[in-house]
Length: 327
Image (cartoon, rainbow, N blue to C red):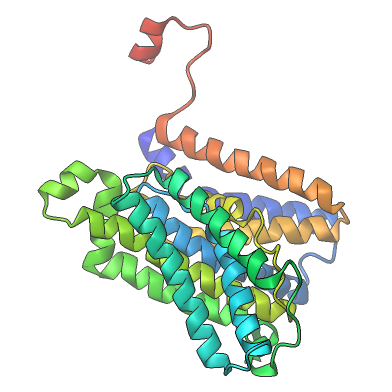
């Protein structure tokens, strides 16, 4: 029974993806065409980049609700520097990535030194970053971006969209960090139990703070890719993206309690979310209805996490003694 649960936990994302693909293939003949599948990968790529940072925070037992706002701010900052101030593309991107790191450092400091719950700390940073975006842009889009920058979002390498190529590169780097470095091993240890990690000599505060640096950096990279793909910086992008990133991580096998998950599963989870968005568009579902469906997917993901971690809920009519004994 336990072995079956572990297998289901490991392959649940793949199972959900296969079911979605089968259902959409029956619902519309346009879904399984090569061009549309490449479009699914493109739609999933930016979410996957951000979700890999989210996975790192979840592995530590935390969470980052600021990723959508960090995306919006860093994309707008880079666009403004290029369009309004005439900065070179590389310099503007470096400043934007640095801003993502700074916001991630703020999250880490609030969690580690401020001793705030990750939910509260990152919720505060979410409000700060979104406010900075609106102040900086005055609520208007920033257009007229240079071609070398927009090529990051609209260009191709050997026929593969650049965001997909960059996503693959990020997956290789983050996967290496998680599985082949002491930092990654210590991160899993912290998520599995802080007290035991302390006794093992792990620098718990550094590990817990560093995951927010990574999350802020990848959110900034996602903001740059999205801005390049849209040919403009939109101050309201990224709204609700944090929930999609959490859903992608959990569908990929990450446990919200920490200590379990990985890059491969997160990529599968992001593909699930991209497939849902693509399928709803192909089926011409109104955008407002799509938000409801994505919310239901989020509930399903969190419910699946709870079920695989602790088993089914006890009966509401069971006595407290029977609940404790698991009968």
